[in-house]
Length: 529
Ligand SMILES: *[C@@H]1O[C@H](CO)[C@@H](O)[C@H](O)[C@H]1NC(C)=O
Ligand SMILES: *[C@@H]1O[C@H](CO)[C@@H](O)[C@H](O)[C@H]1NC(C)=O
Ligand SMILES: *[C@@H]1O[C@H](CO)[C@@H](O)[C@H](O)[C@H]1NC(C)=O
Ligand SMILES: *[C@@H]1O[C@H](CO)[C@@H](O)[C@H](O)[C@H]1NC(C)=O
Ligand SMILES: *[C@@H]1O[C@H](CO)[C@@H](O)[C@H](O)[C@H]1NC(C)=O
Image 1 (cartoon, rainbow, N blue to C red):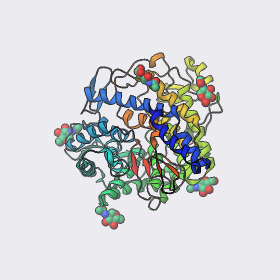
Image 2 (cartoon, rainbow, N blue to C red):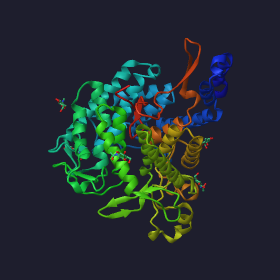
Image 3 (cartoon, protein in one colour):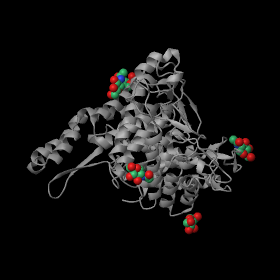
Image 4 (cartoon, rainbow, N blue to C red):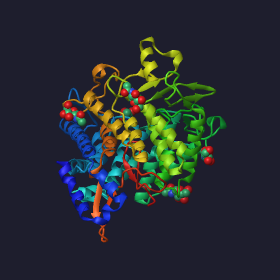
């Protein structure tokens, strides 16, 4: 069906001798008619619609579906996390029906009410970013998908309301926020320090909100908190240039340690240093310098090759002179970050290194029984469990936590590898991963996390469907294959066929991106361009 639809531009090309004579024009049209890629994108869209249908039937407007028992959970304050997280993916897939169901819902969310503690970080990356991204797409390239424009305006007014409810979290002696807050009492969980990632993964969303509302307060709050991370004190907090400790004192803004990693808890601080520069190179040049210092030090000091598979590259952790040889599914965003930054800085060494990280994270998928990678793994040859000796010898790692909760990072980095290199190999890898997830995690109403990626059928199912299945796994799986459908072709007045890719697709090179993806894969329109 799709192929027939997309054979139209082919027909037009055949009529234009001028376009045929141009190798570049002919080449882009060739990828346009890639039947396999279009079919794959449609299969991912089918999975998204399957999950949406089950969520809508059994769990909406709760936060997430329990996809085995067909119950629901409210792990994100009961504001409908899956619906808000699904919006930007439904938009990118151009599913107007689902888009408008979510647009009807968002104005009805009452962000003043919850009986649970609120995570400033999780609320920012899922709800605030989900709404801001929807607003950016619906006031930009996808404006035609909304049937009621007042619902689009509500995305921004709800974003502002939410941030106004949350902003007291920054009211601390240093401006480093509490992450665990009580929005009813305006209290907090009593923490004395805040983590690196949860402190350093707010600045994109809160700055975007200020730029859209012309109210500097949100940007100021998040950038003040970030200032302690950009200028870490004391000196022991930065054992290698750019690589910093993991906890910051809320009263003083001083780091409390020099424990360095790219793992969960630290990860998206590094991700956002680069992405702030993509968002606005004029304001955030210093952020790029800090990112470059961090990746320089990472290559020099954290590079680690398993003894049984020296061809693989993982990132070690470092603390006070000793190294840890353990990594996570979460950490696998690292390849994508090196690739995006390498293309922006035009540094082939960073691109090559990023591809090594992507290869190695893909190995954690294709070596297991399910074809899905584990939550936590190690390559420390001194402590390989005897039951995993043979596995470690072959695969180069052994599994420390074998569950999989529908995380996206491996497919995410494969997407960057494809976008930066255009090597079809990466489309194959992402497809293999998607097919494995679809085969192992799919239930009658959605997708479930599993307990053991290296057991037949994934061990057992955890009966939970995280909202990031919608926001991330299915978005990156779709984007890497979205071929024909992601091109808009038209005849220019001079009778040349021109095809433009959807503007949210990642581009290689400085100043080339119109959108930047937040850490939950919500595309945010960049400030400059
Ligand atoms: C938040 O504060 C209110 C008012 O003091 C209290 O009733 C409620 O139990 C608190 N919520 C949590 C999750 O601690
Ligand atoms: C934001 O910060 C700038 C620069 O420090 C300051 O001039 C401005 O008054 C602040 N605005 C708000 C609303 O906090
Ligand atoms: C990182 O390393 C590159 C290549 O050696 C060098 O040109 C650049 O100045 C370094 N950047 C920082 C911030 O250390
Ligand atoms: C996994 O993929 C890597 C990279 O393509 C390849 O070298 C390796 O043989 C694959 N392993 C399996 C078990 O398919
Ligand atoms: C995903 O799983 C469903 C249900 O088993 C199946 O019908 C569909 O063909 C699968 N899609 C792919 C791409 O494997």
